[in-house]
Image (cartoon, rainbow, N blue to C red):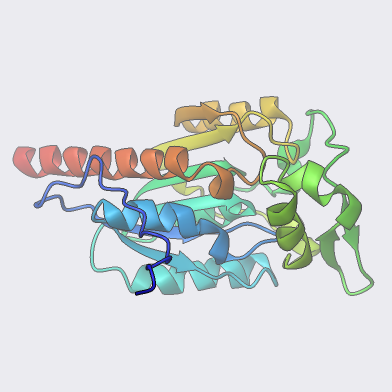
Length: 257
């Protein structure tokens, strides 16, 4: 009789959602040079706790296109939702997060412009990032330079995983970085920020500045820019805490009304 050599299904059942918690929905938005598959570890941990998780696959063709793709997913939610963005996805959720289904925002080493600001303006006054190099083609779409990809994007992912991410990267229309946000959802929604302290895509001071300006609840974790992939426990834990906090606040407001 042949032994069953299939790997056991992982279990992530610590700290499950209470049965009656109203805020269960989570929408995850990836950043540039990636797609939604990198959220798998976070997805597994959140669904094991009882969350209903949807991943928005944004096209990276323009700011408006990415916001529209995110809103399309938010329209499908059946109640209050925690909206999460990584990197460029932070700019996207800043605009899309005013959607009525959004109860809170989580920024995962992510950009957070204010109303009237562009993504590019967030870098003003902060240190350069020499390991995060974008090559822009004649059509205006940019890829991360292959020989810099592991160091700049996924230094803690392991060489095999970093090579796959490098070779499956999704280019972004670079003009998106010059598009201004028309409304900053973090001004009207509670916010959380997971900051990767070894992120080579952003100056650490820049990430901390954006989080402080938002008044976000901050979690710092030793990780690369690919923190959404390499540190799923920390990221999922923050999202879970955000959902619980928003649910408690909503419950208190209902009692007072």
